[in-house]
Length: 272
Ligand SMILES: C[S@@+](CC[C@H](N)C(=O)[O-])C[C@H]1O[C@@H](n2cnc3c(N)ncnc32)[C@H](O)[C@@H]1O
View 1 (spheres, rainbow, N blue to C red):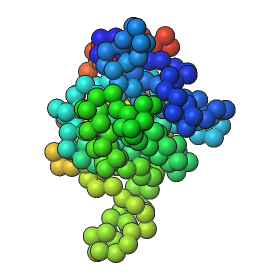
View 2 (cartoon, protein in one colour):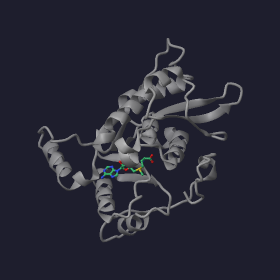
View 3 (tube, rainbow, N blue to C red):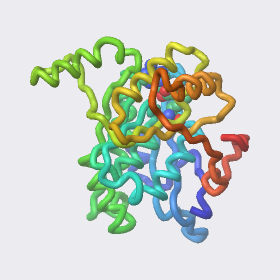
């Protein structure tokens, strides 16, 4: 993880360039593992297509926090995420969920409807490979196994937090009765992840998010969120989710270790 750095812009993988196309949708290659100065390649890479802010709003692009969280998932994947049911909330362009899907038994990658196609695209761009093709073959046997796992585990599912008050409970009841639900609903998960979810000071949105976490969290589950602690919704989220009259969670807040921060060049703040 020592030399992890984000390379933004042109990918050096031709097939991905071809697949991602050109135009308003930007693409990023995010490197993991050791960096080889001679070949200028990382040991491992993820490819992420971003959208325009006009088409996709706040979830159009990769937030720095998502890259930092993905470094953690990448490092501890076998230890923490392996064979677990995982869900990413508000996934945006889906980097964290795509990485978690390499390890998880199921990884639901969720967000609002207008982001579904791009998230599906990014899941596929990172799980497809062809061992007979120099351009798409996996760099190691381990990566091949992880991509095979990802093809089975990765599921892009629409999950609007506001549907937790009506449609989602209705669909859950329908599933319990053996009926076809009005919408697809993920199973309860052992790990729920999210990056920069409590960014808004709009308490209604934070309330909906907390209810989603509470609904989909397994009894002994954990919710891992990474965020800048100066975001507007953080204090309300922490106050409410730790209120014993409302929820029964233990909360731990810790500063991200510097080895995950990398060299962003985007003014990443210390407290992130
Ligand atoms: C600040 S962005 C972070 C995106 C991504 N996690 C990242 O770090 O790159 C917040 C994400 O929350 C999603 N979001 C906001 N309100 C939502 C809602 N009501 N239901 C589901 N997702 C929502 C947005 O679409 C967006 O993708």
